[in-house]
Amino acid sequence: MSKYFQQLDYFTSDFVKSLNTELHNMIDNGIIDWHEHHKQICINTHKDHAQDKFSGIPKCHIGTGSLVYNWADNGVNINQEDRTSVEMHKEQLSEYDFNTLSPEFKGTVFEELFNTLSTNHKLGRLRFMKMTQRKCLSWHQDYTTRLHIVLDSYEGNFMLIEDEVKHMPNYTTWKTDTTYKHTAFNASMHPRVHIVGVILDGVQRRNT
Image (cartoon, rainbow, N blue to C red; front, side, top):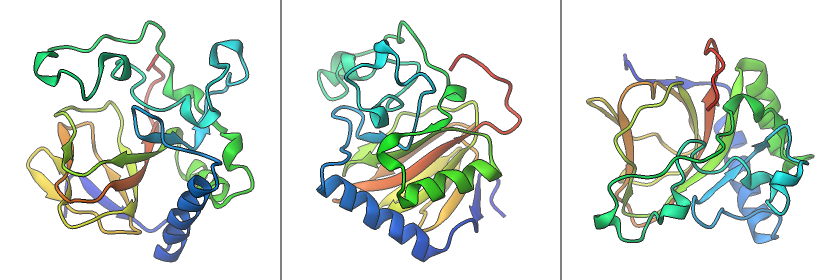
């Protein structure tokens, strides 16, 4: 039995496949789009999304990227050899405040997804995360576990937690213990897309 990966039976493969179909339909129809830098879309949004500080930002983009580090403004793909650190955001939002379904997803299958997961877990952000081909994440650890719902996965897509490597197949759902050091890499020639949820069960509230 794996120490870090637990497959969940919350959803059938057909339901997860319908999520993938609806995601592509919404993008094709211009309802949502990937954040320019983060390549993410957030299904839930900040409780204060109507405030002026979020003016002009699509509700489904408020929760994209890191809540701690300002990767976008430091150039994720620019002068990588020269970058030794990344600045922190001056204002850091809290996972606990992403408790509202983003309006773009009202009346869609993603509302059902959000409601189902919310009955099973205390959720933070629930995001579509796209990893482009031939990419790898940094070696890091989170302060909570994560849900992974696999929409687009290919041969060469792996997650590594400590010394265990896992390929998570299409249309499956997993709980991953990312409180341990981990990374993910896409060694394929196609983008990998997962829905990733922050699990706040039993975690004491903190600022980020």
